[in-house]
Length: 25
Image (cartoon, rainbow, N blue to C red):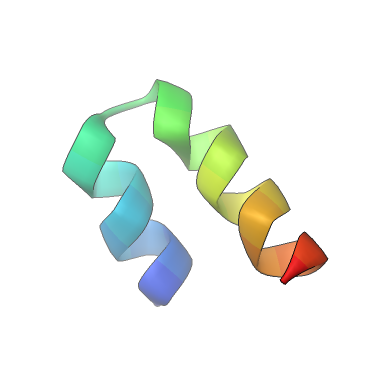
């Protein structure tokens, strides 16, 4: 759910970045 919150925080562009960051982290 952290990825979702991060994505919503920025908007639609962060949806992909947030998911990728979660996988890398």
